[in-house]
Image 1: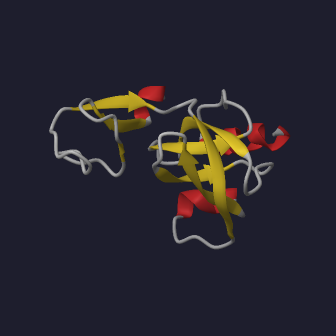
Image 2: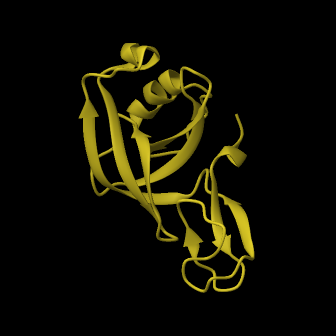
Length: 128
């Protein structure tokens, strides 16, 4: 799992950060877009919730599972998994790990996560 799995588009003309992905810039309509890796990027946790039920069998062993919304310094907001020690308003760092199906997902924690799997990342993020 690499940081390259956490790509965000930036317009090369006006510098706008784009999320979700687009074919043209929503600000200046340029098609000159570049991918920028946001793994390790600083962000702020603006909302949190805890899931107690899931219809996804691979996620059931991870319940209760915290999900949050972060706002990147560049402006876009992302939905991410949240480490247990994270609270609303906290400065967080985004890390890319594999969910139980091997799909790259982002985890927000107080520090970069070294783990490569979601369950390990959430345990590692407990320390804050």
